[in-house]
Length: 146
Image (cartoon, rainbow, N blue to C red):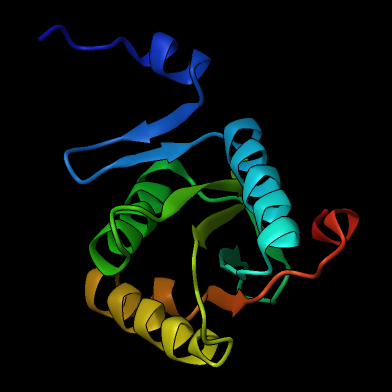
């Protein structure tokens, strides 16, 4: 099987690809988020959104370099199901994961803790201290996700 070039992968929405999985670029992730949101509105079956962002030591948002992003993506792929969508929520700044068909809204806290534990096990402690993880059920209105 032929390997896909990095530029071809980016053109079809893949931002990062490793043996563990593929992460979407922001445009592709937003597309999947919109589809999941529309499905939720029609069916009433909620989903969870996990967001991971990096902060400077002073608490202001920071850009994630490629090495840090790849480690965060890897931790998410090892923690979440293969059916969950992972990618850039905000390119270079916020990594997102969507978990579909979540029937228990209380699962958000447990999932957030599980992701934090995975990040703590896979990254240096100074980096983990700067990562912020949120897990929540998105609002019903699509415009509130921007």
